[in-house]
Picture 1 (cartoon, rainbow, N blue to C red):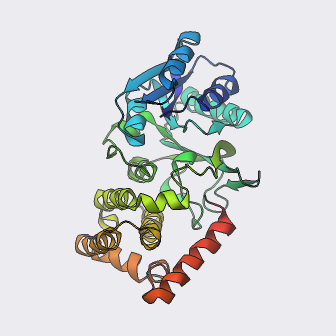
Picture 2 (picture 1 turned 60 degrees about the vertical axis):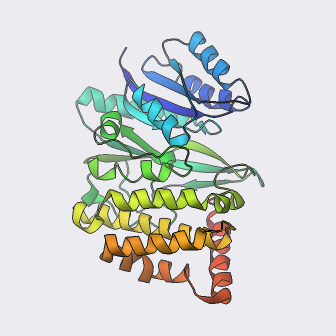
Length: 344
């Protein structure tokens, strides 16, 4: 049977928790014949991730592919899953996260309906839920007011996105050909590439649909996660690398024609520059300040209008305050926002 959707699961030393992720998709779909799971072992060294992936493939050969590659990082694992995908749609699920079964049933019914009716929808958007380890609470990110619900639309139909409503990888289900046509500039051995995945393909999408169900459950709060504050500060070089790739992907005011999409992407990129500015202040990386200054200068030279929007707007000014007092103020604003939105 043709596959309606392929789920790519990047795995690196994931044996402890990957079964929950895989089972949530297979059982949640009712072991549907048109659902595919691609488990990508990214060169795991400390556990039996690859052996587990092969066991899943042996148990469900019509549903599961086990793929092994030399360690290349999260982005390379995402691309390996995409290369092996047979589905009309492709969705990435990290190995420590999982999918809600009832929401998955609604997603599958919607995608099958598009196929039966001959409707081409390039991007399907769903909500995601932060499952917080430290207090056992949940934070749901939806797109209330930003997106019309349950109807096919174009970018001209979208509204204003609040700062916490970015379309992250957790919320995105692309048509597979959208991702393959034009590619995704993922660097190897780099964290935070999910921002590239959630940014670069957007202008290729002509039609979208907000299903408005809480599909993706993101396990948040473990000390070793890439979005942990100390970990992010230690990897500021990778955050800067990802942001530079996003910057060089488009001259947004020239290349992105739907005004509404351009406004959203400008806002997203502004947040990325703010994150770089904040974590440079936290980082003890010796070259962090110099590399941030170079990124700001390169943005100025690459796209003056984007530089003005990012650096001289409220977010840019508030995350680049001068002097030690200004630095403390910037970090205070960040920590207040972190507590309110609970984004990591």
